[in-house]
Structure formats: C-alpha cells, structure tokens
Image 1 (tube, rainbow, N blue to C red):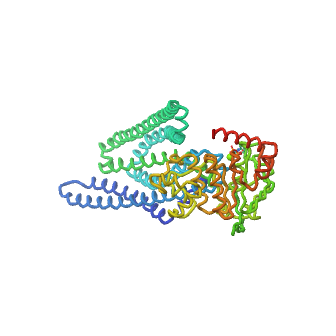
Image 2: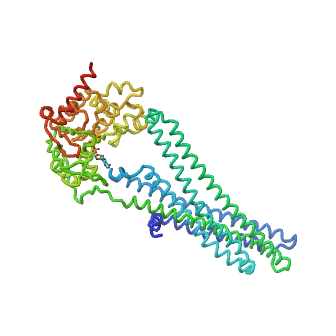
Length: 582
Ligand SMILES: Nc1ncnc2c1ncn2[C@@H]1O[C@H](COP(=O)(O)OP(=O)(O)OP(=O)(O)O)[C@@H](O)[C@H]1O
Ligand SMILES: [Mg+2]
C-alpha cells in the first residue's frame, strides 16, 4: 500500500479539485437515501383523494432533490475522473522523460514492448485503482452504513435476514473476481503479443518477403490471435458467471424480502412505504459492496503495475552530470582518448581495451578493424553515449564527465551505424536536431554537402518529400547521407560517422569526405568504416584487433606498407573494386 500511497500523492497535487469531488460524494449519496425515504414516507401518507395535492408537492420535491443529486454526481465524476486523467498524463510524461534520459545501456537491455506496456497499461491499472477506485470506495463508505442503519431501524430481523444473500454474493464474488482479473490480464498480454507480431512483421516486411516466410509468419500471427480469442472466451465466461451470480443474489434478496416482509405486511407489522424503503435501501447496500469487491480484486494488479512504474522512475542514469560543469565553448575540436577500456554488462571480454588517441582539432581520424572489433563501442564512448570503465575521453582537454551532456551533444554530430529516419519529410528529418525546420537555401546547401542535390531534385515533392517509416522509401545510400545531413545541420565542430558511408559508392564517398573537410573549416571528423577507402585521406588511422585492442595506427600510406590486417584487407578490397570495374 505504501507504494500506491506515493502515487496517491500525485493526486494530492490537485487538492482543490479532489476535495471538491470528494465532498460531492457524500452529498450525492445522502440525497439518494433522502429520495428513498421521502418516497417511502409519502406512500404511507396516501390515504384518500384529498392527498392528491400533497402527492404533487412531493413529486416536485423529489424532482428537485433528484436534479441536485444529478449535479453532485456529475461533479463528483468530473473532478475525480479529470484529476485521475491529469495524474495519468503526468505519470506518462514522467515515464517518457525518464526513458528518453536513460542511457543506451538501459535500452539495449530492455524490450520495447515491455517499455510500452509500462507507459500504457501499467499506468492505466494504477489510475483505475486510485481514481475511480477511490470514488466508489468513498461512495460505499458513506452509503453502506447509512443504508444499513436505516434498514435496521425499519425492521431489524428482516435486515439481519437480508444479510444472508448479501454474504453469499460476497463469497461468490471473492471466488470469481480473481479469475476475471487473471483472464483480463491474459487478454491484455495476448493483445500485446498480437500488436508486437504485427509491428515486427511489417517493420521487417522485406526480410519476411525476402525469405518467403509469409506463411509461417501468418501461422504465428494466427497462433497469437487464437490465444487471444481463447482468453477472451474464458474472460467472457468468468464475467458471465459473475453477472449471473450477482443478479441471482439480487433476485434471491428480493425473494427473501418478499417472503419475510410480505408476512410482516400481512400481519400489519410493516407498512407498504417501509417495504419500499427496505427494498430500495437493500440495493443501496448491495451494489456499492459489489463495486468495492471489484476494486479490491484490482489491488494486486495495481500494486504490481506500481512496482514496475517505480522501478523505471527510480532508475538512475549512469551518465552523471557534474555539480559545476565546465564549458566547452568555443569548441576547437581536439580529441583525446587516454587508455580507454569498456566492457558491456554481462560480458566477460572487453569491447575496447587500452585505446589511446591524440587528435588535433580539424583532423580526420579513421577507425577500422574486423567486425566486432569495437569500432561502434569506441564511437559511443567518444560521443558520451556511455562512459568508459577506465581511462578518459576529452574534447580540447576537458574530460567529457566534467561538462554537461548537452555541451557534448552540441559539440559532436553523431551518425549511428543504423541509419534511422523518422516517417516525416526530408526537411523535417534533416532539421531534427534544431528548434525549427531549415529554410530551402540551407537545406539545398546541406544536400550539396552530402552529394544529394540531384536525388532530392528528383523527389516528386522535393525537399518536402515524405519518407516512409524508418526511411523505407529511400535507398540505403540516400538514407545514410540524409543522416549525415541531419548531423551537419547542427554545425558540430566534431563529426562522428559510424560506417555511415558503407552504402555509398566510392566516388561519391571520396567527394563527400572532401566536402566534409572543406565546408566545416577545421571540423574534426571521426570515421569508423569497413571499407578502407573511407579512411585513405585520414590524418590518422587506428586499426582495432578482434579483442578491442589497438593493433596498429598510422596514416594509410604507412599502413599499406606494413604487413598485417590493414594491408591484406586493402589489397583484397582493391582487387574487388578492380574486378567490379571490369
Ligand atoms: N549492447 C551490447 N551488449 C553486449 N555486448 C555488446 C553490445 N554491443 C556490442 N557488443 C559486443 O562488443 C563487441 C564490439 O562491438 P562493436 O559493435 O563495437 O563492434 P564493431 O567493430 O562496431 O562491429 P561492426 O564492424 O560489425 O559494426 C562485440 O563483440 C559485440 O558483440
Ligand atoms: Mg559497428
């Protein structure tokens, strides 16, 4: 409960609306009881035709009371449900802010489906339990004792008898509510699985089609869909039984009241008005108890959801910002990595080990090596997506941990290995890192810098061409160059490219690299690549070995003259290029 209390405090931030809503609850409930009592008393007063005026007067009073009750009911729902929606919204926003701020290491280890369900269904579970849950509970807290008191004052033995079916119904509910919750959870999960299947399949539709796996994917979808159908049926069955049980108990209570109350009426121990009050008040006890039982059944789920939300909100970023950060301005762009090592969590080997590089501002650094040698890891450390386990990464002599992440982000333009684009226009994608979309002139210059002018001109909508989800309407090379343009738009002093030219032909590649150097006027460029042609013009090339260690370093001209991986790879790639020309 302590955990949920922390969430309830979020409701208390909207104290005024909440208190107003809470005050409306007893007002509406008491008016509800008052209407029943007035009708009961009226029935007993009616004796002859002369009572017609009295009856009409009472009808007026009842309509008035009913109107006021309606207003209270409306306001109670309005304030409490609105507050619960506000809290939901704030909670979702906090979760989203947290998720965005968490480092790559968190995202690498978590499934996106799990993250989505924390932001959606977990938040909904907590909201339902605390918002509407509170409203129904408070309603029951007022209604049940008041109605029971009145029932016992009208006819104590009959009131005591009526408790029997109520108790039976309570037991039935206790038995079936957990089942309903269990099946509704199963339905929720199987629905999420259907969503996950659909999303993954359509996201990877090229792979599905390329491998001719449509049938097997359809079969897997069918399986998930069938599971959901079965869960829905089981949920429907449990719901049906609970409905039958509550309505059965309801009717059974009627029968008890009719028999015991009817006998009392025959013996003239009970008036018709009292019997009416009795029946009506019984159901004013009956339904709130059902509602509270329902909410109590939601408790375990709400608690589990609260734990999952807390776990995410309490997670600390391992990228800690200093209390008094140093400024990087004006960034010159000198880079130094000193004895940098890093191993990923839960792995036994180092991805990068003892990497040391000194790079003056305005130079080009190439990082090459076989696949899995740690190129991406080195760039992630350089762009402070994560911190090294040992050693330091500095820009102009300042350790990245001594400045803010925002300073690092504005100094470095980072182009990841997977060229991700948003399903937006070309203009919006390139302007992603800026506050406002770029104008045509600046965009045209960027297109030129990344050698895309002709291709953009061929887009039917030019600069405002919509790009399909994840950039599917572009070629691999166009996607990569759009990502470079996106990084360049922020005019960073340091540009970091992770194999971002792999899908571009060698001629365009050479032109692009020379553009990057010329247009940046002293910009520092770091290029990780498989294709050695990318680093031919680099001022320094670092060759990583399979264990994440520096095998050797130097300029291209030196490296091709030394026996080793670099020379062999260069000769192989040269031979391949020559063959492709033939
Ligand atoms: N998130 C991760 N968790 C655990 N291990 C990882 C993770 N990312 C990378 N690795 C491992 O770290 C090592 C270095 O990977 P890295 O991606 O830096 O290599 P790379 O040189 O960029 O490879 P490629 O040329 O294929 O892009 C590899 O052995 C890889 O399996
Ligand atoms: Mg890589």
